[in-house]
Length: 271
Image 1 (cartoon, one colour):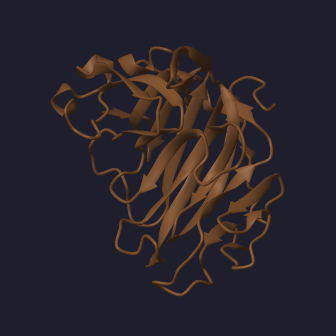
Image 2: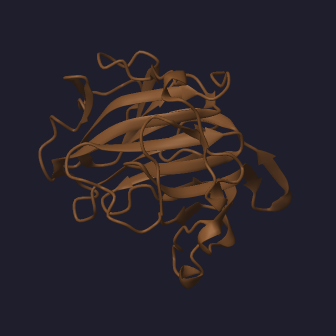
């Protein structure tokens, strides 16, 4: 387990899977809000049945500096799902956000764990669910790494979980063995085991530097991959490196709040 503390963290390089980090004085960090706490300027919505920027069910409410999901929906009712996406693409960044669970759950996921997520490197048209990578936000599974619909990357897993579906991340420096994640459908990798999620507000972070990604939950590095690419399963030589894309907050039939969605560019990564 790697614990990251304070604001000295600036990112992980190509050797992050070997437990190496890069640090810089906290004073050098400049965070910019992606969500301004008042409205969705710079974002758009995409919902099942309703499409882009149309929310007749009032799925999304801005209140007290937070994005509240499903405030107006009755517990156990049928709801639409989707996401809130950035209008711009981003690459080479350190992203952080806070989330907390509400109490209500809805169909079609009422019998399942509370679930949401943060999509990043979204490419192509809007869809539920989009072609992207995902920082999973699901109770007991926060920080899992998903590669959706052609996304593929190199990572490491605990050899004891090699036969599991899905296997579990383990640092190369801690005995992890190489694995290729994704490339077809939805590829899934569980985060490093541990009791990292807390009651109330939790902080998730994504460091997307070049073609690498690192997932952090409440200061703990829980997943990592590199050589991010999109492939056509029918053509092994089709791999195209991916280093940027849109970012989106997933909406998936559970009452929850997001706030303090902030980004720090590692280079001039806003496109």
